[in-house]
Image (cartoon, rainbow, N blue to C red; front, side):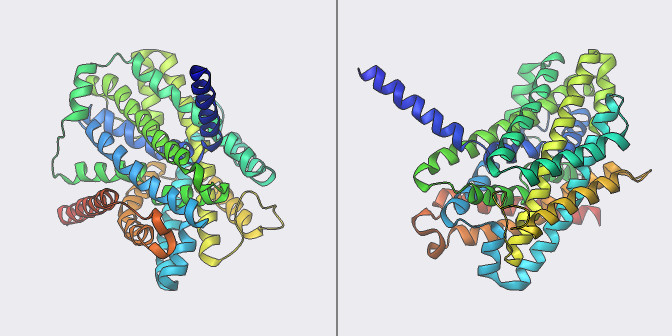
Length: 413
């Protein structure tokens, strides 16, 4: 009888978790976007396994930061920009708005670069693939409810499994992998610092904080079930970074050991083929295409949420087009503009992606300071304010990223 009660309770909890599952996993999976895959491919082919420890450290930071955003969304029912506008005034809202929109647009353009590159690896012209992907995203978001769009994005998250498969195909030295994941190595060269910033910028992102908070608020998460949302955030962040690590492992085990250096995901896919066969190339291309479509939609939605919250406009996927014209208009505008820019011949796509990731990392400390002030405001959060440990970790992360940014600036000058 007790065993039956236990299994019934377990099934109930699993059912609730599957219903809650979404914002955390989607946000973390979208972090492994075209820009992220390019960054991790560069890291693996240039530095081998030696930067895996950064992924381990970032995972802890991402769980803490994402959970703060999710908790504010669940408790207040409002997005990040809503709370910034209401608590910090117009000037700070405008400054954060400009920085976020610029970084988001650059990163969204990067996703369509990934769609173009992924399609061309399968022999499909970007002039067919990019407009088609843009149309599919617009149709799914405009005519789908929150639940429908979330399911669509969760399915796209599964494409990341291809990178785990490609890493095992590379037959890495798992002992060396484990050592480099646990033992930090560091140097102060501008290139190393830039790579660290880009890695942080593609993993813990300002848009990710804003999206997860707005998404949890949009989902109307019940506080009595918040523990499942916290589990979704922790699981999603860990899973997203496991995938990041496997991209580094795949390129380190094959390209780095052969002295092959790449600066993009498509270069990595092409370089892997003669070393591991056509299957590796296909797996890398599938992951790139799926991740780019997922992140393209999430980034455009993040921009829509933030802009509408900043101006007090209706926003959310449960509204119809006529009820929230600005929300859907911004989403469509971001998708169409990004798609059109990618179709410009000769555009330096890698520079656009790399710069957007670095800009994300530079803006992140600014947003973290605002988030830390908000999440510790008892008038907003009541008993759901940060613990001392959460504050200590948030402050440490903010100081560490700021210090690396300043050090990079000094070295560059």
